[in-house]
Length: 146
Image 1 (cartoon, rainbow, N blue to C red):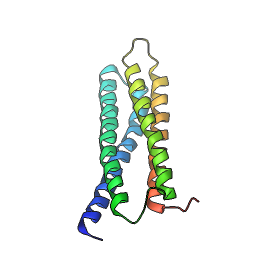
Image 2: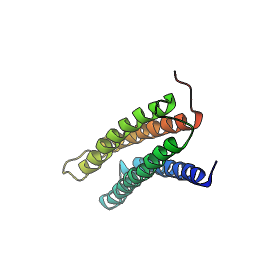
Image 3: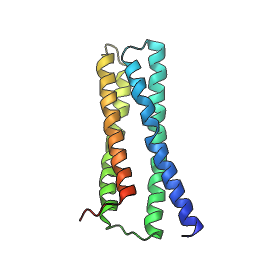
Image 4: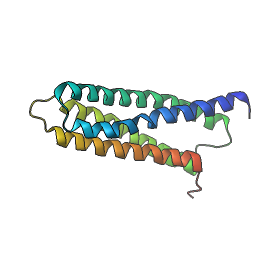
């Protein structure tokens, strides 16, 4: 393996870590969000926004490095685990775009139910973590699906 290919793998793994890891810090935070005072709630929501932003931009590096790895590596686009990862990737992009921002925005609306919105954020966070971990599993295990 040449240095460029190994560097691409490193960037790919690093961007996967940056895409997945920060969501785990949100789980204890969402429990505090259920009863947080207004000033603390704003801080928690800003942290959520930052994690979503970081995940999106890390995802850009992840996708670009993944494309370059397929183009320069031993796999092709019809490899089952790559196709499965792409299906989940596009699903998760749609999910990420719609799931977090709308719920976070609802916290600023008058008369919102803080506990209900926090539960929704917790569920959304777990679903997104699950999607990301499933893609990670495909990339690491490379299962022969068909």
